[in-house]
Length: 71
Image (cartoon, rainbow, N blue to C red):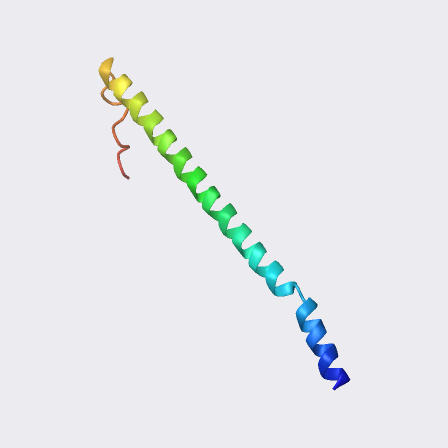
């Protein structure tokens, strides 16, 4: 009976499972924030290059934004 009570107290006081859940949630938040930052930077870079290309076309440099010839 004493052994059963000791095991019950150890199970009650064990916080490893709770810590693992907290760390999992934290990793999920960090991963989501990282993905959103990467998407935001990608959108900004795409917009910047599109604006540059449009400005170059406006001044008459029609070859500036043409895709490179393959081969």
